[in-house]
Image (cartoon, rainbow, N blue to C red; front, side, top):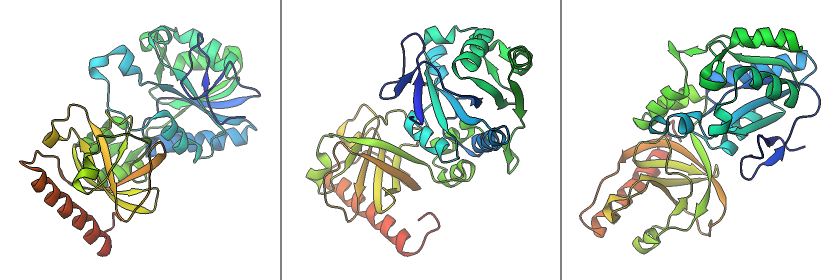
Length: 319
């Protein structure tokens, strides 16, 4: 059985995921967006796995994509820490048996709280134990809350438990807070609350070829227009083995209009086109800026590469 699937809601499933109508067996479930899978999420998910084992149940994380804000209030939608597969990769590492996604669209946003509990949590996902955050809200216009879930659980035959909030260094850890840190270039602080370095895994797509013309070929990563990163240059590690220099932004020297992530790998020869690669962000080097000439840009790229190499040689804690 596939460990990452999409639940069939009105014949709408997430692209590239196996589409299922329901789960087999009995499950312990937690529900949320879980963007970034930070330490607070990990605390909740690890508790789910432990409690599932005690009850002889399989564990399942139910998530949504796209982010509900993108549908309910597009002007306020947050940037994206993880895409569905990156999110699932992090969740499965915590010992979860299955990750289930629901395609969050306008139609699904109108599902009433009671119907969500009865039709999806209980009937489709075969829930026997539901673990949620202390402030969980769900259903149409967030009408549902924990007490309603407990009431329905008693009627239908599944247990509902809440997890306490998770704090570190006096901060209530949230995806919103981590987005703010990354937007400010404060990678080291973001790492602390994520519990690991921030990374993405995306497909290398065809670019403009300007990097090759400048003497520094780059891998252009698709689906990076809405990352939670400050525009600028980063030291990165690619596929856990190659150091690299990445630029995230609009490429103002060439009049770019859309954000893109471009990565130059050091000491690498080969073609990555069409492959999914892991890019791990080590440190923020400088802000993106417009250069007056290609020659000036090349000199700056050379300085950026030296900065990465020097940090590696000196044994920087970020490397």
